[in-house]
Image (cartoon, rainbow, N blue to C red):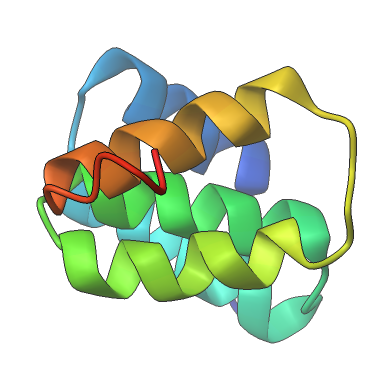
Length: 89
């Protein structure tokens, strides 16, 4: 079974490389282990692939755990800006 690789997905998304591959890795990782880091990575990969509405849904899911992670908040802001939601950003 394909488990996905969060680190690979995050690396590809951070570098702007192979957005669809990153997205596939992130989706598979979420299916294997649905947790906050997987939701965050999936949101970031969706954003980098240009799927802003779906990214917003996933970043909201990642934010519910109230984790004090500056990168999570930064990614949330970028996703909201991409959707022209300046107040939320």
